[in-house]
Amino acid sequence: MSKQLIFIIQIQIMICKNIITDEVLIAKQVQFPRNKHSDSYHNVKIPKIQSFVMSEAKIYMKLSYNPHQYLLGARQIYICDQSIIYIMHHCKGGTLYDYLIENDQNLPEIVTKEIMRKLLEGLNHLHKLGIMHRDLKLDNIMLLRKKDPNSIRIMDFGYSTVVDDERLSNQRCGTLGYIAPEILNMNDYNELCDIYSLGCVFHALLTGRKLYKTPKSAKASDLLIMNRNSTISISQICNPHAMELLQSMISAAKQRSSAAVCLQHLYFEEELFQIHLIYSNFLLF
Image 1 (cartoon, rainbow, N blue to C red):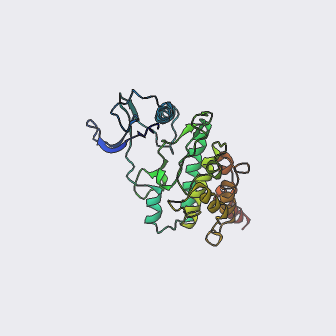
Image 2 (image 1 turned 90 degrees about the vertical axis):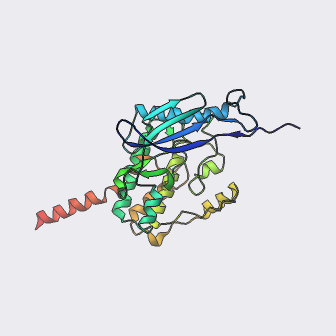
Image 3 (image 1 turned 90 degrees about the horizontal axis):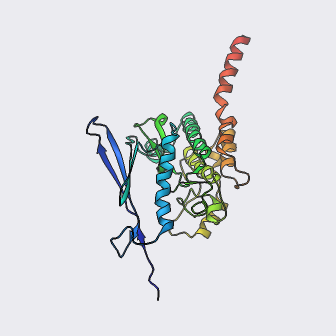
């Protein structure tokens, strides 16, 4: 009877300080995988696990050369014998989930609109680089400063991969309640899976609740049924443009809008239209 090998990836998050500038930072240490029954990191052939760990490093390196104001990249990367260490900004404002709870799960529409604009801009940049995030959720979106949604950042690229990396781009991964149906179905997928996940975030910002409940013990088949039977809280979304944008983000993959198309939606042009209308009326009178 063959022995099943179990491999462990240890991740530690530590608060640290720059001894020269006194700046408070975050250090994320990812240990290279090792056999559960061995202390060795290098004597076992585990290419899939190794490529998974190194994929994150490659993503952060790519972002360091192509930064974006709404993506939380790594300021320094240290590749050691037994681990990789990422040095990042300390986000004092907590997660977007924390911010939503602090505001009684009821954000003003103008705040929701600006948050979504920034997240779509960051995601559009990521997709232009050929990167899929694959784990967008309220807990992976941070605020650099307390109570300041303008300081929002997309973070945690542990599940991210390049779109054309066949070794990693067909894996089932993500977080229950945010995973696109094509991933649950084990179908081929691309960067539009991130749009679905961001659509679930959008639904939470608009209504204060998840698109569908996700019991921890649920099987993939059960989640697909919940996904198909999920309904948008129509009574809680008064803006028809918000509803239309949300539906375009959580529709079937073939009909789903890209980040670039979402940014051109009328939902983001309403304020400009209203300002123009007020100015035109002023001129008329």
